[in-house]
Amino acid sequence: MVKKIIKEEMVSIPEVKEIMEELFEKMDKIESIQPDPFQEATYEYVHNFSKMSSDVAKNIMKMLVKDYSMDLEYAIQIVNIDPNYHQELRVILEKDPTLRVLSKEELEIMIQKIRDLQA
Image (cartoon, rainbow, N blue to C red):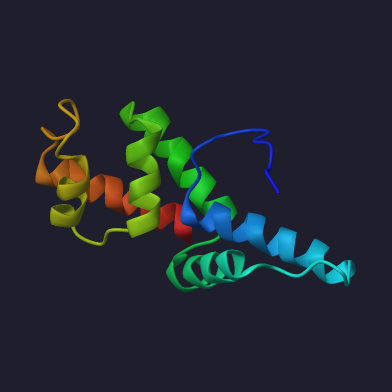
């Protein structure tokens, strides 16, 4: 059966986890619908690799886009990876010409802002 794409947008792993949890809850209520193997594998992946709640992820992405004029793609990667060190953050941002010039101190401040939003 061909499915119609209703909406397409970039989302982080925590957001995918939340979407899939809602989908599985709806499927549980309707006994005739069961998740297919692809859905189960995807849910297992996001369950294992989600490092924060969806709300926290959204707040972090908003902060990164607003405070650093960061593209959403980079903000999503930062949420998905949840870097702890400025070197990890630098690897994510090295392709962006405006963000790759941030100093070690600026990157550490960014990491601290992320940690503050996670608290």
